[in-house]
Image (cartoon, rainbow, N blue to C red; front, top):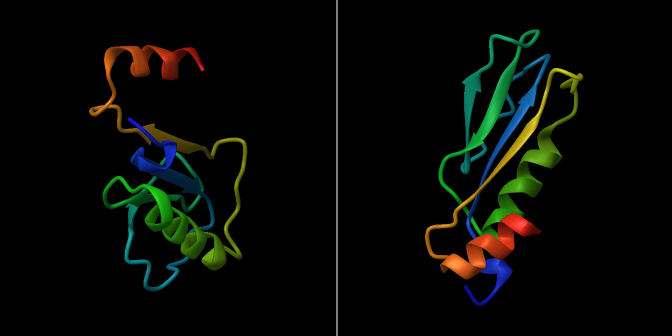
Amino acid sequence: MNNIKDIKVGIEVELENYKPLGDLPHWKVVPENMLVNGAEYVLKKPLAGEELSKAVGQLYDKLTVERFSQRCGIHVHIDVQDMSRVELFNFITL
């Protein structure tokens, strides 16, 4: 792994007071029954670099009436498949 910008990331954003946001090509909506009118936006596939930045920006720009309570969360999944053993342990240590 030469560059942190190459690391693929999966993201889940939980929210309450869900309203459809229209076309978000990188995201799918999954109901979240533990929240009040809850849903989560999940990246359809892990992304990295500019593509990840663009996807997060598109979601951010659309979120206006949703509520993020103490029950909500954001989960970030890191794709470590291409990391060497040393890189993986360094990443875990960080």
